Length: 463
Image (cartoon, rainbow, N blue to C red):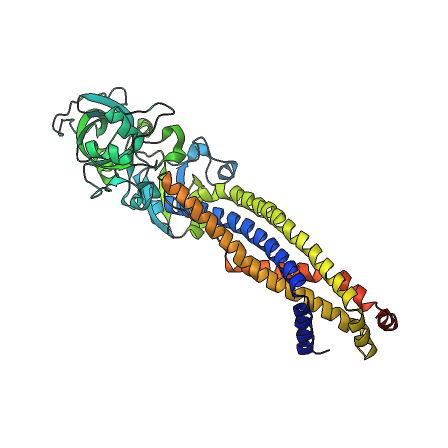
């Protein structure tokens, strides 16, 4: 039997039992819609997670530390010099790393404790320096005010919780939080006074070059290599950030942020300076890579220099495995409805055999082979599978859009930005329709075999 004749005959047979075949096709559509909705949710969540990490700068950033620092894994211990021979992270090392291929920038992690005076009240907190590239960090998307006007501007950005502390509006658990807009009104444009410890080489006389600074030289404690001078620096509040740019640093995260070049020019005393006798030493260096796909190459190059590295790529390998398991579970549960629909295909085709015994008998009497009869039933099952799969994909996509819309309405009422939780890539569309087609063919195995085994003489006598 030729393919055009087979297709025409199969479609004619499907039209004759329109209601029953339509209900069976709807069952397939519901099964495919369930599968697509489940998998698109998992894909959407993974893409949402990836977008968040990419925008936060974590996917293209490598953290460099000395190998003798705690938190470095065994892999670094097997490469490069022994921990005791590891070089210090000074300015020369930073420049060397920045010149590596595929590196966009390398900047030091300048972090220190200082006292900030707002009005007559002192507040002690951790301060961190940010490069100009941090402006694209998603933590500053909903910020009130503006980012630093330049790398050397005497400006400061406050995290929301520290802004509440300055205004004395720290809320108790269960109370309604103060909005960032309410915090920004009395703070933006106001000045803070920062009291900090400055590192001054002992060969240079320590003098209070900053207006209002008090000096206190302690060269004996530090081996007469440099002095510690207490300085004051006036800072203008230019922004209030709602989210925490350093939420992944745990208890060591900063609540106040300065421009990177300004912090470098202040020569702030840091804990790592206590072990140094020359240039400032950094506790860590953050390295931004031109392309996230090149992170492994950059990490390998830095490890050969004798330093330890960490990137979100190292942690995301386990997360990718979690998403694969999630896909498997969502696919299994989504396929259950399709399995139920396949039973409907078997039932529909078996009933068709009973109704078309005479037709099958005549076909075989005029020369149709068992294979031709099987092909006819396979064609009918496959047609229902393809049609049901296509309708199911559209239905699954529609379900995702409706749920995504409803979720964003709820997020908007909770003052959260909208998100896209569902994603239906082209490969999922093709896979869903193909899977529906294969399941339909498998479901047609038994009815096709049963129809092919009919004796034409018995079939005609039955009529």
